[in-house]
Image 1 (spheres, helix red, strand yellow):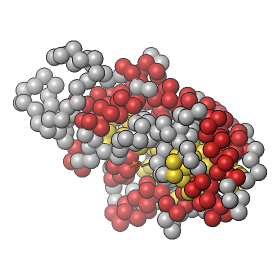
Image 2 (cartoon, protein in one colour; image 1 turned 90 degrees about the vertical axis):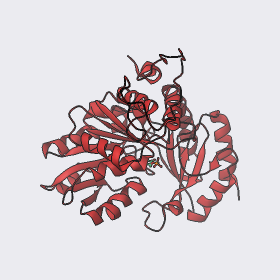
Image 3 (cartoon, protein in one colour; image 1 turned 135 degrees about the vertical axis):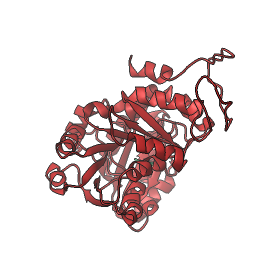
Image 4 (tube, protein in one colour; image 1 turned 45 degrees about the horizontal axis):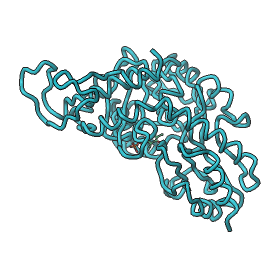
Length: 370
Ligand SMILES: *Cc1c(COP(=O)(O)O)cnc(C)c1O
């Protein structure tokens, strides 16, 4: 089946009792003993969550999915499944929450790490140690849109008995097959494109067949307890049904906006992998189906100017997050705090599903504002 069909049907079943075409939302925290589906207790089981996990597994062509209450709960579960003394290599521009989680919180529990530019394969090879268990990539990355060659980094990891996990939030399963290109684990913040409407928080870890950390991460879901509710699982499934068509339009709009911005004199750099000038363009062309709806731009004359442009947009909402139907703009570095590596003249744009002419007109007036 093709991904459009999977997004609508995978994991879904018509309610056997009522014939309801849409699944009922299950709020019950406990189940009668001896039920047909072996459901026991709300933290361990929820029919909407099980439906969601089956759908995500099918979308990724994986073996198992473990759903969490947020993207960060999913990220945390992966690193918590490792042991004190293990070593991980994480991309130097990993999402700042995940980076802090590894470099600060997990470091206190004895997990060792190196921050590496994964676009430089020699650096990756050089950072491998005998106790390296996992390489953590994010492609395209947040907020610099760096492109990591999934197959090449997977080959390095596997040659040394390590796993490759990829944060696939920005690409979604629609735009980038992760497992088929060699990743062992895919992590999504489903808060973003998968939910798609900026009205739920969620995360998921998807596993390839025979992946060794699966059991521990399932335990982490059950006993760590960071589970998504039945309602959030239901909402997320509702979002996923339109994901393939939403992603097409996000990409089409982003392509038009990126072309406009690349030609604008107030903008000195556009980070969008769909542009032939982007350093990761060739790899993105090979490993992605399209280039996504996210981009960052750097504007002339620095921090104040970037803040002023973000403040002057009328259609783009000045807010963090991404992947919803509405366009967002964010002056990123101040949000990431004093430890940020992000340039202060950078604005991150989540291109929504409004008409691209209206988005371009809004950016045009904001860039011209004084
Ligand atoms: C938002 C985001 C996360 C964190 O997800 P939450 O749902 O906010 O916890 C992780 N990685 C990337 C790339 C993100 O954009």
